[in-house]
Length: 123
Image (tube, rainbow, N blue to C red; front, side, top):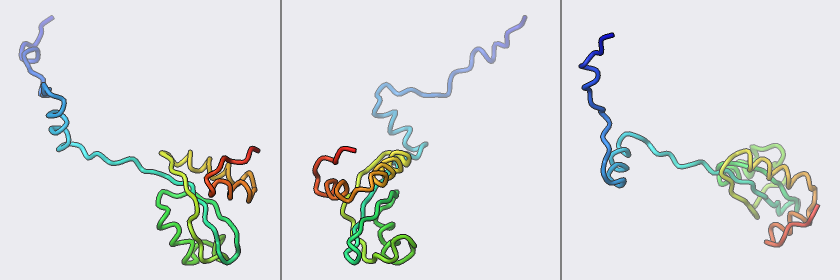
């Protein structure tokens, strides 16, 4: 069995810097580091109907604008809506689970306690 000597003599083309800081600067030119997307569970209050609305979004500001412009059928009758509470999550599923948890309780007292910053009312 013959070994091709030209293959065994090749050097790796990957350069390793002696300092981690330099290697990071070197890699930043080749990769685009995208910040992680955040998701929010939010509660809106209508001053017109005195009702609360709970939802989730990755962009709460634009979502509130949509609610107040009448683009959302479920909130159209309560315009204007005001953001009264929100929680931040690292992933969409966690935000959805929290939204569903708040909605399942069907408790105005629970929502008002969240807004006031108190402890949630036990189930």
